[in-house]
Length: 152
Image (tube, rainbow, N blue to C red; front, side, top):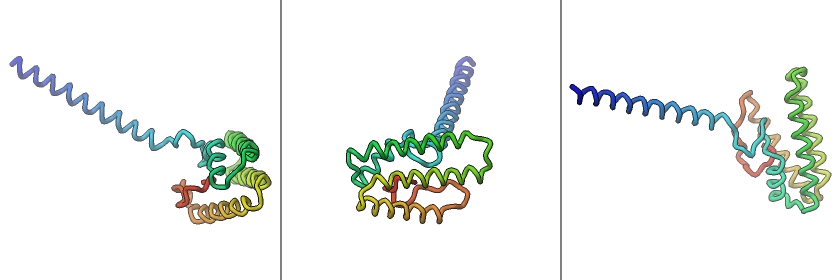
């Protein structure tokens, strides 16, 4: 009788341990899926430093251009975060302001570039706009096929 009771208690503890492990694993999996990679900020934009690194590789930014581009991207990020926290705007107004901020940043970055870099920049922007036009269905789209595009 004692051995049976011992076996039942041991089995019960094993089952509780397995269930707890499964629950914790599912919770961790859900948290990993819900949170973006750490170098990405909200709303689909990577961290300004990461974007600058990507643009340096894609466009061949010089050491003089890099801090200027980084400043423009940091400014954009700060304006976007302020806009995101402004609850007084309608969704349409917020979207329009976001587009204005993004357009302004694109113009600032483009002005920093050489003519050859501007051609590459324009191609990158065109691809991004085409991709966004095809993936505007109300859901967050997956990354575009060209993962070298810094403005995902």
